[in-house]
Length: 546
Image (cartoon, rainbow, N blue to C red; front, side, top):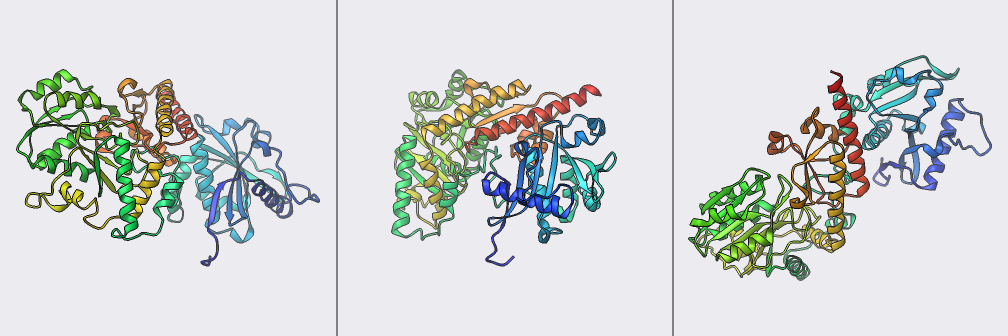
């Protein structure tokens, strides 16, 4: 392809013109080339199952160059040609019929065929189907076998248009693709297109408006335009959090917590770190590295914070000290009582510090009377990772005698968050994301979490955290017996669903997490639940059979 040639795009056909081109390609292939159907004056071939077909198409600009149809309704067209079709198919799978594979002549023997099948397989897997049934032309039997197809039964069709019935488990298709150097690349995650089946706690899939804002031409961090934009962004962030001020740092959320620890190190005061999960324990790690004097109330993971135990732990923390905790414990999905803990700390003359990294933008966050708090651009706010937000109640003073510049919150504040090179792309994307951070969005996430929890529990999953103390941004689940969380996560991966299960702390506990921080569409959640149900049903039925 030349630089002026448009890229090939694969999608589900939705437009009238796309369907028209599908039917004309079918005519050229199955009437003129393979004499399977009689000719007609319109030179269009309308399949008898047209209303039930899902057409996957390859488009070069506006020109359709390849198509394949998926159909799930029984009886299949092959049912009428192969008596007792199910007898030939492996049990425990949900089949989809793959039909009407057609590629324009000049695109055959190219990557178009493989890419078309790849898109079709991914779409079928995302809908819950895991067995493909096909009548493959005898001209391409070698290729089909290479892709993992298993022939069965006798040839069907007519002389000159003979086909071999075959099936392939879609997992087997993926395995073959992974082993083949020629096909492996097409099954790697596609980083050049957004994944609408992304249920990771980060990175989330940004909205089109955020992606568009990010790719705007970069501008100088010293320009008046950038200074004005960042000043406005900081004001909007502070209003959203009901905080006095915020600094926008170039770095991850971990940087923000290191900055909080550095600020606390400036005064010889004792504090208390609360933890009941991985990220509370990380705060304790931040405190140790900063050589802070502190007590650590470490509760079992997922155990609800009890103010009585907190009061006991504060017995040797004098007034003027501090208390540091995580608002949304991402490792479990638990939402800690922010306002109650802040009020509790203030009543004892302590400064409250809060990690709001995965709660800010997911639920309402009220940082009134909070000494220091952290958040990030790339989770609930819906932008890209790379900006760390540190909210502060009072104006920090730079301490070059005590702190490195990058960890000195006063240094950032004295320069209006621009003491060093900044990223206009990240700031622009966060500004766009903030415009979408509305009450409607928070309501959607909460409603989606409520629906998802109920749907998962009906399938036999157990949600780790009770709904009354759960954050809607993360649902941590324990699979029913017969399948592990890691096995389930791997199976979802190859079906295009990105969930969180690989972190060491999740692997050790056998947990899998579905994150809604990116406000995924409801239809994506419905696909996820459908596929989870099929995977669990198959695995549990296999265990019973044994």
